[in-house]
Image 1 (cartoon, rainbow, N blue to C red):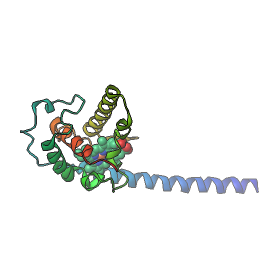
Image 2 (image 1 turned 90 degrees about the horizontal axis):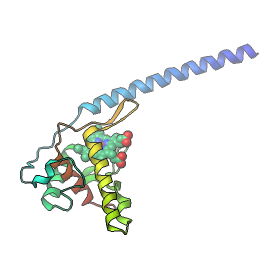
Image 3 (image 1 turned 120 degrees about the vertical axis):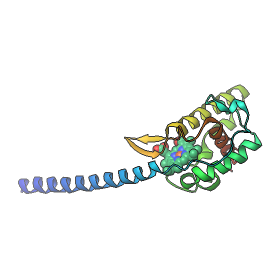
Image 4 (image 1 turned 45 degrees about the vertical axis):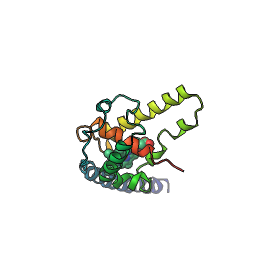
Length: 165
Ligand code: HEC
């Protein structure tokens, strides 16, 4: 009886492992397909201010209307497929980007609020440049070499201009 139980547990464990392996292959294939689909946004960033040509936070284009319009166009070309049209956060599993730095708005102290926004900017830029990998699986592709700092800051400005209500 004891022997029988042990065998059946082993058999179950083995079929469980096989299912897990199959799942892992599926996830990997899916991730690889996503990883290569990077659509470079067709936008002309030459009129954006010179300060936007560096990765250094805080966002030099915050509130800049021309940057917001450009960012919207770039977003819908390159990011909307995963993050939703106009960053509306309607597509899972990609997160709703309007949540990034949301808590900063509630900070009363102006200097502290600035620091909080700067941190959120840095996180945004890092995520965009290097993408998101977990356990070697690409969830979001890296955009370094495809999107420069000016367009990245324009994207951030656009997302901020479209707040969660
Ligand atoms: C192929 C789908 C895909 C595309 C295209 C994509 N993303 Fe993502 N992005 C994701 C996923 C999925 C995550 C969450 C990854 C995780 O945390 O594991 C993510 C995470 C992020 C994060 C971090 C957000 C957070 O709260 O953790 C930022 C910022 C981001 N993406 C910005 C962008 C921008 C800007 C673009 C367009 C240039 C873009 N993404 C294009 C799928 C995508």
